[in-house]
Length: 73
Length: 219
Image (cartoon, rainbow over all chains, first blue to last red; front, side, top):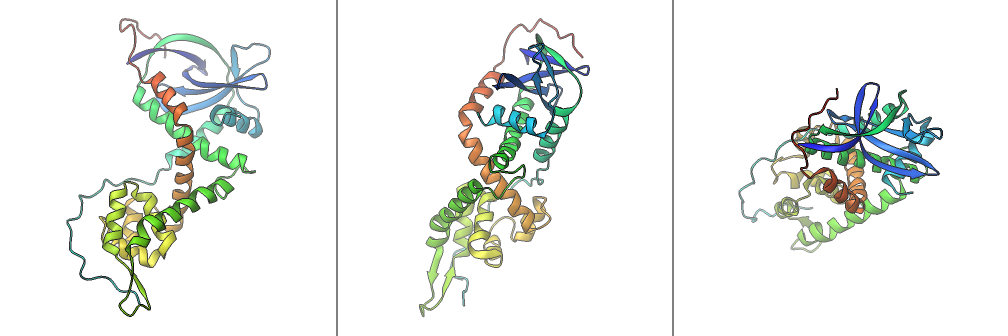
């Protein structure tokens, strides 16, 4: 099955953007590798470039991202 | 002294249920999500046509939502740890009481001298088979009447004993099973609340679409 989706290439691997949520001006995205559903991560955009997404900084930010993406805080 | 009602008629046991392994993937996926989210590496969004195995993605999405729901229940409850939240106590406690009312009480009878009571083990087992949530019901059974009596009920199921049930499903002991089931029960409650959102995701990723002639030039 072929489908047009938004992807992000991180470390030479393409990831589908499966979900996104905004909290306090930051957009968090939940990514899944289409070739490996167990390869998943959350990324956030940077203030300097809204289209560029990088890693989370710490446990607190990870918890916030999870809540924003999956608990509608 | 409780005794078994020997007059219960024998019944044909249903075919053997497919065994399942204790699911470590949920915790493993959550662990990978955390570790990968801190890893170095940035990227820019772009739109591209790619091949996706939608069924695998849907399963991955559902399992990670379950894992994160468990974690967020712990976060909201005041700690980064799973279980022992107020919500868990409420949800699980309510379900245990419901099982008592719907399954145990109707099959609890007084002895002829009216001084003791006994369970109709065969009928309790039949109710559990019929309810369609067997794993949860094994937990509720133990919670209501204890492991010793529960084992007598299990004799009239496919598994024939709690020990066989635990080993078939990959549990090391009763405590591990109880911990897992409590998490599952709360996670199911969380999932039910998120069902509308999941339905939307399934609709978005479940539709066959476009342009079979376009090839993917990615990695």
